Length: 302
Image 1: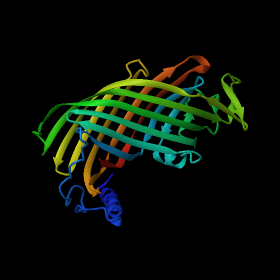
Image 2: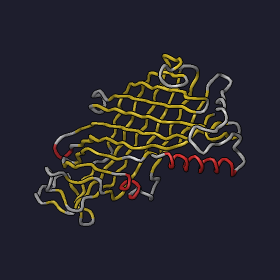
Image 3: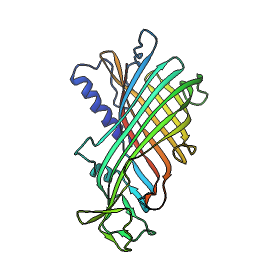
Image 4: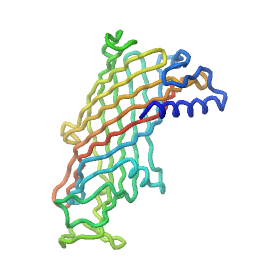
């Protein structure tokens, strides 16, 4: 995401703040420049502070999947995601929340998306009996909950400002439901398939699992209103999936304050990978996919 896009995003949010008379900080044309000093987050009587983030993730998905014993290549780009969101229901939801007191943090992250008629799932070359105008209806939910504990904080010897290091631990719940259809089945092997509207459909049904994870997070306060956050975790360990990992890096800057509450904007990049399998034969389900792409959002401090 280039600087001009960042500037446009900042200006849009600034206009939103100013339009309702909420903005009581300065606002610069360049990211992280010209803003007033960052306001302190409001703390409750027992010392807790809270943040809530609403964000958008623009992912590419690549890998492979098996539904009802049929294997598929997964190659989904952002245009396929946005062009096939299922508007008959809630198409997508992405949010992050964290409560913090001293070195302790408790966090939750939710990603939900529902696609209809996506062309990003295609029969691979080993599965030519299930082919011809392949499309997918696909729903994915990931709900993450965990804790963070600050183990070190000091001035950064390389970058400006101060740095804190957190250890992370938690669990990530996955829910998936895939219906992949094709116009042609050439082998005569119809086991596990159903015929709907002259198309052969492989339905995974509801697939659910939970992955434990551990990780680290670095929070570098570049200035009174700028922060760089880098997080990495890995998990699965055969408890849910065979293995999973995630990397997230974001640049955060203060935009304005709303009734004394700080509103931040942020941009970054997120990658999330999982390798999960269950069943055998025509009940086999596998999902070995990497999702990666830019994220953009805003955070309200309570």
